[in-house]
Length: 305
Ligand code: FUB
Image (cartoon, rainbow, N blue to C red; front, side):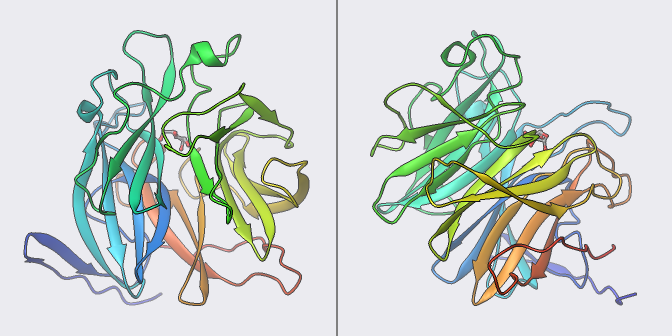
Protein backbone atom coordinates (compact mmCIF):
# COMPACT_ATOMS: atom_id res chain seq x y z
CA UNK A 1 0.00 0.00 0.00
CA UNK A 2 1.31 3.43 -0.89
CA UNK A 3 2.09 5.45 2.17
CA UNK A 4 -0.27 8.42 2.23
CA UNK A 5 0.98 11.83 3.20
CA UNK A 6 -1.40 14.72 3.45
CA UNK A 7 -0.82 18.37 4.13
CA UNK A 8 -2.80 21.43 3.32
CA UNK A 9 -2.26 25.12 3.70
CA UNK A 10 -3.78 28.30 2.39
CA UNK A 11 -1.83 30.23 -0.22
CA UNK A 12 -3.43 33.44 -1.46
CA UNK A 13 -6.81 32.03 -0.61
CA UNK A 14 -6.25 28.74 -2.40
CA UNK A 15 -6.14 25.37 -0.69
CA UNK A 16 -3.15 23.40 -1.96
CA UNK A 17 -2.80 19.76 -1.07
CA UNK A 18 -0.58 16.82 -1.87
CA UNK A 19 -1.63 13.24 -2.26
CA UNK A 20 -0.15 9.85 -2.90
CA UNK A 21 -3.33 7.97 -3.66
CA UNK A 22 -6.83 8.24 -5.04
CA UNK A 23 -9.27 9.91 -4.54
CA UNK A 24 -7.45 13.08 -5.48
CA UNK A 25 -9.99 15.21 -3.61
CA UNK A 26 -10.41 14.23 0.03
CA UNK A 27 -11.90 17.44 1.42
CA UNK A 28 -15.28 17.21 -0.35
CA UNK A 29 -17.26 14.52 -2.07
CA UNK A 30 -16.91 15.22 -5.80
CA UNK A 31 -18.36 13.59 -8.90
CA UNK A 32 -18.81 13.72 -12.68
CA UNK A 33 -15.37 15.18 -13.30
CA UNK A 34 -14.50 16.71 -16.66
CA UNK A 35 -10.94 17.63 -17.55
CA UNK A 36 -9.49 20.53 -19.52
CA UNK A 37 -5.85 21.25 -20.35
CA UNK A 38 -4.97 24.89 -20.77
CA UNK A 39 -1.62 26.73 -20.58
CA UNK A 40 0.21 23.81 -18.98
CA UNK A 41 -2.40 23.12 -16.30
CA UNK A 42 -4.76 20.19 -15.96
CA UNK A 43 -8.15 21.41 -14.75
CA UNK A 44 -10.90 19.28 -13.27
CA UNK A 45 -14.49 20.54 -13.13
CA UNK A 46 -16.64 18.47 -10.79
CA UNK A 47 -19.99 18.59 -9.07
CA UNK A 48 -20.03 18.42 -5.29
CA UNK A 49 -22.01 15.62 -3.68
CA UNK A 50 -23.78 17.19 -0.71
CA UNK A 51 -26.32 14.54 0.32
CA UNK A 52 -26.86 14.05 4.05
CA UNK A 53 -25.00 11.02 5.45
CA UNK A 54 -28.15 8.92 5.09
CA UNK A 55 -29.32 10.63 1.90
CA UNK A 56 -30.50 8.14 -0.70
CA UNK A 57 -30.44 10.44 -3.71
CA UNK A 58 -28.24 13.11 -5.24
CA UNK A 59 -28.00 16.44 -3.49
CA UNK A 60 -25.75 18.69 -5.56
CA UNK A 61 -25.76 22.49 -5.60
CA UNK A 62 -22.35 23.61 -6.85
CA UNK A 63 -19.56 22.78 -9.25
CA UNK A 64 -15.93 23.12 -8.17
CA UNK A 65 -12.62 23.55 -10.00
CA UNK A 66 -9.33 21.81 -9.19
CA UNK A 67 -6.06 22.11 -11.10
CA UNK A 68 -2.54 20.75 -11.21
CA UNK A 69 0.65 21.18 -13.22
CA UNK A 70 2.12 17.80 -12.19
CA UNK A 71 -0.92 15.58 -11.40
CA UNK A 72 0.42 15.27 -7.84
CA UNK A 73 -0.11 18.66 -6.23
CA UNK A 74 -3.65 19.95 -6.68
CA UNK A 75 -5.10 23.39 -6.15
CA UNK A 76 -8.69 23.62 -4.95
CA UNK A 77 -10.08 26.74 -6.64
CA UNK A 78 -13.35 26.33 -4.78
CA UNK A 79 -16.97 26.43 -5.91
CA UNK A 80 -16.79 28.39 -9.17
CA UNK A 81 -20.38 27.84 -10.26
CA UNK A 82 -23.61 27.29 -8.34
CA UNK A 83 -27.07 26.31 -9.45
CA UNK A 84 -28.22 29.70 -8.14
CA UNK A 85 -26.07 31.31 -10.85
CA UNK A 86 -28.70 30.06 -13.32
CA UNK A 87 -31.93 31.90 -12.48
CA UNK A 88 -34.03 29.45 -14.52
CA UNK A 89 -33.09 26.34 -12.56
CA UNK A 90 -34.48 24.93 -9.36
CA UNK A 91 -31.42 22.92 -8.44
CA UNK A 92 -29.16 19.98 -9.24
CA UNK A 93 -25.52 20.53 -10.14
CA UNK A 94 -25.29 17.42 -12.28
CA UNK A 95 -22.56 16.56 -14.75
CA UNK A 96 -20.72 19.31 -16.63
CA UNK A 97 -17.80 20.05 -18.93
CA UNK A 98 -15.78 23.21 -19.53
CA UNK A 99 -14.22 23.84 -22.95
CA UNK A 100 -12.08 26.60 -24.43
CA UNK A 101 -13.07 28.35 -27.65
CA UNK A 102 -11.82 31.60 -29.14
CA UNK A 103 -10.48 33.06 -25.91
CA UNK A 104 -13.40 32.10 -23.69
CA UNK A 105 -14.23 29.20 -21.40
CA UNK A 106 -17.70 27.71 -21.78
CA UNK A 107 -18.90 25.56 -18.88
CA UNK A 108 -21.83 23.35 -19.94
CA UNK A 109 -23.90 22.01 -17.06
CA UNK A 110 -26.82 19.65 -16.36
CA UNK A 111 -29.49 20.93 -14.01
CA UNK A 112 -33.27 20.95 -13.49
CA UNK A 113 -35.53 23.45 -15.22
CA UNK A 114 -37.81 25.39 -12.88
CA UNK A 115 -40.77 25.67 -15.28
CA UNK A 116 -40.34 22.96 -17.88
CA UNK A 117 -40.50 19.37 -16.78
CA UNK A 118 -37.24 17.56 -16.28
CA UNK A 119 -33.56 18.17 -16.70
CA UNK A 120 -31.98 20.82 -18.88
CA UNK A 121 -28.58 21.93 -20.11
CA UNK A 122 -27.18 25.42 -19.62
CA UNK A 123 -23.84 27.12 -20.15
CA UNK A 124 -21.78 29.65 -18.25
CA UNK A 125 -18.91 31.66 -19.72
CA UNK A 126 -15.71 33.22 -18.43
CA UNK A 127 -12.45 34.74 -19.67
CA UNK A 128 -10.56 32.44 -17.29
CA UNK A 129 -10.67 28.67 -16.62
CA UNK A 130 -11.30 29.46 -12.97
CA UNK A 131 -13.93 32.11 -13.48
CA UNK A 132 -15.77 34.17 -12.59
CA UNK A 133 -18.39 32.39 -14.67
CA UNK A 134 -21.78 33.90 -15.55
CA UNK A 135 -24.81 32.33 -17.20
CA UNK A 136 -24.00 32.86 -20.89
CA UNK A 137 -27.55 32.69 -22.18
CA UNK A 138 -29.99 33.42 -19.36
CA UNK A 139 -31.98 30.34 -20.37
CA UNK A 140 -31.36 26.69 -21.11
CA UNK A 141 -29.72 25.52 -24.35
CA UNK A 142 -31.61 22.23 -24.17
CA UNK A 143 -34.90 21.46 -22.40
CA UNK A 144 -37.17 18.44 -22.54
CA UNK A 145 -39.56 20.05 -25.03
CA UNK A 146 -36.73 20.02 -27.60
CA UNK A 147 -36.48 16.24 -27.26
CA UNK A 148 -40.09 15.15 -26.69
CA UNK A 149 -41.55 11.77 -25.78
CA UNK A 150 -38.74 10.83 -23.44
CA UNK A 151 -38.13 10.75 -19.72
CA UNK A 152 -37.48 13.67 -17.42
CA UNK A 153 -33.86 12.64 -16.94
CA UNK A 154 -32.66 12.42 -20.51
CA UNK A 155 -31.26 15.92 -20.99
CA UNK A 156 -28.15 15.56 -18.85
CA UNK A 157 -24.40 15.13 -19.12
CA UNK A 158 -23.25 17.48 -21.88
CA UNK A 159 -19.90 16.96 -23.59
CA UNK A 160 -18.70 19.57 -26.05
CA UNK A 161 -15.90 19.05 -28.53
CA UNK A 162 -14.52 21.75 -30.84
CA UNK A 163 -13.04 20.24 -34.00
CA UNK A 164 -9.96 21.54 -35.81
CA UNK A 165 -12.18 23.52 -38.23
CA UNK A 166 -13.79 25.36 -35.28
CA UNK A 167 -17.13 23.51 -35.46
CA UNK A 168 -18.38 22.58 -31.98
CA UNK A 169 -20.48 19.50 -31.30
CA UNK A 170 -22.49 18.84 -28.16
CA UNK A 171 -23.48 15.29 -27.19
CA UNK A 172 -25.59 14.49 -24.14
CA UNK A 173 -28.32 12.22 -22.89
CA UNK A 174 -29.57 9.44 -20.70
CA UNK A 175 -30.78 6.28 -22.39
CA UNK A 176 -30.50 7.91 -25.80
CA UNK A 177 -27.35 9.62 -27.02
CA UNK A 178 -28.21 12.95 -28.63
CA UNK A 179 -26.14 15.55 -30.40
CA UNK A 180 -26.29 18.91 -32.14
CA UNK A 181 -23.83 21.12 -33.96
CA UNK A 182 -23.43 24.24 -31.84
CA UNK A 183 -23.43 27.63 -33.49
CA UNK A 184 -20.26 29.70 -33.30
CA UNK A 185 -21.71 31.60 -30.32
CA UNK A 186 -21.40 28.29 -28.38
CA UNK A 187 -24.74 28.92 -26.66
CA UNK A 188 -27.21 27.97 -29.39
CA UNK A 189 -27.61 25.39 -32.13
CA UNK A 190 -29.25 25.09 -35.52
CA UNK A 191 -31.34 22.25 -36.86
CA UNK A 192 -32.98 19.35 -35.08
CA UNK A 193 -31.57 17.31 -32.24
CA UNK A 194 -29.96 14.16 -33.70
CA UNK A 195 -29.56 10.70 -32.17
CA UNK A 196 -26.30 8.74 -32.24
CA UNK A 197 -26.47 5.00 -32.66
CA UNK A 198 -24.12 3.60 -30.01
CA UNK A 199 -24.73 0.28 -28.24
CA UNK A 200 -26.04 0.21 -24.66
CA UNK A 201 -25.71 3.96 -24.19
CA UNK A 202 -26.45 4.99 -20.62
CA UNK A 203 -25.19 8.52 -20.01
CA UNK A 204 -21.95 10.50 -19.57
CA UNK A 205 -20.82 10.87 -23.20
CA UNK A 206 -17.29 12.23 -23.73
CA UNK A 207 -16.34 13.19 -27.28
CA UNK A 208 -12.74 13.75 -28.35
CA UNK A 209 -10.33 13.36 -31.26
CA UNK A 210 -7.21 11.25 -31.00
CA UNK A 211 -4.79 11.02 -33.92
CA UNK A 212 -7.43 12.06 -36.43
CA UNK A 213 -10.09 9.64 -35.18
CA UNK A 214 -13.16 10.52 -33.09
CA UNK A 215 -13.72 8.69 -29.82
CA UNK A 216 -17.06 8.65 -28.02
CA UNK A 217 -16.92 7.09 -24.57
CA UNK A 218 -19.95 6.78 -22.28
CA UNK A 219 -21.32 4.97 -19.29
CA UNK A 220 -23.57 1.95 -19.71
CA UNK A 221 -25.97 -0.02 -17.47
CA UNK A 222 -26.13 0.01 -13.65
CA UNK A 223 -23.76 -0.44 -11.93
CA UNK A 224 -22.16 1.40 -14.79
CA UNK A 225 -19.30 0.41 -17.00
CA UNK A 226 -17.48 2.78 -19.36
CA UNK A 227 -17.58 1.74 -23.02
CA UNK A 228 -16.42 3.48 -26.18
CA UNK A 229 -16.88 3.74 -29.93
CA UNK A 230 -14.80 5.35 -32.66
CA UNK A 231 -15.62 7.00 -35.97
CA UNK A 232 -13.96 8.86 -38.81
CA UNK A 233 -16.50 11.64 -38.31
CA UNK A 234 -17.63 13.60 -35.23
CA UNK A 235 -21.24 12.61 -36.03
CA UNK A 236 -20.63 8.91 -36.64
CA UNK A 237 -21.40 6.27 -37.71
CA UNK A 238 -19.91 4.83 -34.55
CA UNK A 239 -18.07 1.50 -34.29
CA UNK A 240 -18.12 -0.14 -30.89
CA UNK A 241 -14.57 -0.77 -29.64
CA UNK A 242 -14.90 -2.14 -26.12
CA UNK A 243 -14.92 -1.49 -22.42
CA UNK A 244 -12.62 0.95 -20.67
CA UNK A 245 -13.76 0.53 -17.08
CA UNK A 246 -15.66 -2.08 -15.08
CA UNK A 247 -18.08 -0.86 -12.38
CA UNK A 248 -16.25 1.28 -9.82
CA UNK A 249 -15.94 0.53 -6.12
CA UNK A 250 -18.92 1.33 -3.91
CA UNK A 251 -20.82 3.43 -6.45
CA UNK A 252 -23.51 2.66 -9.02
CA UNK A 253 -22.76 5.45 -11.51
CA UNK A 254 -19.62 6.03 -13.50
CA UNK A 255 -18.54 9.17 -15.31
CA UNK A 256 -15.28 9.58 -17.22
CA UNK A 257 -13.00 12.14 -18.82
CA UNK A 258 -10.01 11.17 -20.94
CA UNK A 259 -7.26 13.70 -21.59
CA UNK A 260 -3.65 13.86 -22.74
CA UNK A 261 -1.40 16.05 -20.66
CA UNK A 262 2.36 16.55 -21.03
CA UNK A 263 2.69 13.39 -23.14
CA UNK A 264 0.71 11.11 -20.84
CA UNK A 265 -2.91 9.97 -20.91
CA UNK A 266 -5.17 10.39 -17.89
CA UNK A 267 -8.52 8.82 -17.13
CA UNK A 268 -10.62 10.81 -14.64
CA UNK A 269 -13.57 9.11 -12.96
CA UNK A 270 -15.35 8.80 -9.63
CA UNK A 271 -15.98 6.04 -7.11
CA UNK A 272 -17.35 5.74 -3.59
CA UNK A 273 -14.19 4.88 -1.71
CA UNK A 274 -13.67 7.91 0.56
CA UNK A 275 -14.85 7.17 4.13
CA UNK A 276 -18.63 7.62 4.17
CA UNK A 277 -18.65 7.21 0.43
CA UNK A 278 -21.40 5.63 -1.66
CA UNK A 279 -23.36 6.37 -4.84
CA UNK A 280 -24.33 9.82 -3.53
CA UNK A 281 -21.02 10.59 -1.81
CA UNK A 282 -18.61 10.07 -4.67
CA UNK A 283 -14.97 10.99 -5.10
CA UNK A 284 -12.93 11.98 -8.13
CA UNK A 285 -9.96 9.79 -8.98
CA UNK A 286 -7.32 9.87 -11.74
CA UNK A 287 -5.47 7.03 -13.45
CA UNK A 288 -2.54 7.41 -15.83
CA UNK A 289 -2.69 4.97 -18.73
CA UNK A 290 -1.23 4.27 -22.18
CA UNK A 291 -3.11 3.92 -25.42
CA UNK A 292 -2.49 0.62 -27.18
CA UNK A 293 -0.14 0.90 -30.22
CA UNK A 294 -3.16 0.62 -32.55
CA UNK A 295 -4.88 3.57 -30.84
CA UNK A 296 -7.40 1.51 -28.91
CA UNK A 297 -8.01 2.20 -25.22
CA UNK A 298 -7.25 -0.70 -22.85
CA UNK A 299 -9.53 -1.97 -20.11
CA UNK A 300 -8.19 -0.01 -17.15
CA UNK A 301 -7.30 -1.27 -13.73
CA UNK A 302 -7.90 1.30 -11.02
CA UNK A 303 -5.68 1.99 -8.04
CA UNK A 304 -7.24 1.25 -4.67
CA UNK A 305 -7.59 3.95 -2.05
O1 FUB B 1 -24.24 13.28 -10.66
C1 FUB B 1 -25.54 13.13 -11.13
C2 FUB B 1 -25.58 12.18 -12.30
O2 FUB B 1 -25.04 10.92 -11.93
C3 FUB B 1 -24.74 12.58 -13.50
O3 FUB B 1 -25.31 13.58 -14.28
C4 FUB B 1 -24.57 11.26 -14.16
O4 FUB B 1 -23.53 11.25 -15.12
C5 FUB B 1 -24.29 10.35 -13.00
O5 FUB B 1 -22.94 10.35 -12.64
